Image (cartoon, rainbow over all chains, first blue to last red; front, side):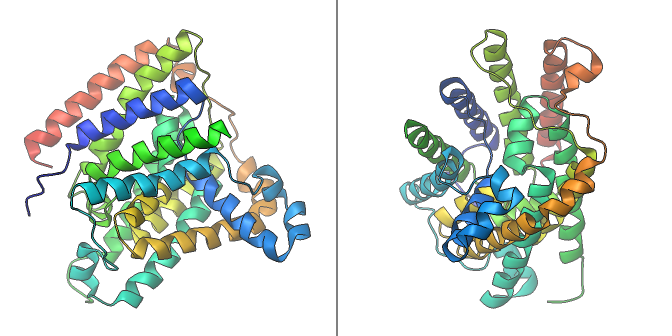
Length: 172
Length: 175
């Protein structure tokens, strides 16, 4: 399948690197995404039990509020939407192509896997103190030791589960 | 308030670029993890090299400060592996899940819901983690140049060259 409107990943990577430099220069902010999910969870939990949330150590550390990063993460969805619509590549899809070829078009099956995968992924990201943005891009570009250890572990873990899911033969 | 506006603008630019580079797709992320499609790696390494040069230049000129995450071996290794396993199942990382949603991928919504739930679970587990895994092998905020005892440019320049050689190899192999 030819995809004429896409940019080279080298160009896209370099451009996004320039955006990261600009962000550090003008606002002193480094990329990151996973803390936002903590703040979002805290904001939701606060509706039901504000007192409990105000006493939980993790929510004292990462205060549930709308901050720079939450806006950044929201912006990613918006920017992607604009880019998709203006290049005619916006497509409503509930099951990715690769997944469908392997596990079939069942929407529920994919939804359950995505939900469980999301729980596991963010738990790990918070334990590691960052995700591929915070550790992988921002950490690695500052030559932080933690960034490279994290990046290696992200890929090792991912290769294990992807390999298990996409092992030749078996299942459909 | 101005910070929030900057956050939104930076996110829009980043999301736009990632969508055009096609790096927010499930197929690309799983392709990378199955070592069949190096799009994600090309994107990340290009970003890292460019940002590294810029950020260290700004830092040398006193125009920016580094913001390092501590190297706590227990947390980073265990958390990194757990994250990876989840990433392989979900097929999106936190940032790209938002991007995927933006280009109409509804399965990302389930991933995002799972991540909010998972973050809530981690908040419950944190007091325990703080006493165990997060105390194992805490080396503080260290960088590779510090560990090697070298000037950072003596690390950055060879790093950039290595990445270029890797890119050349990717293209030669058609990866």
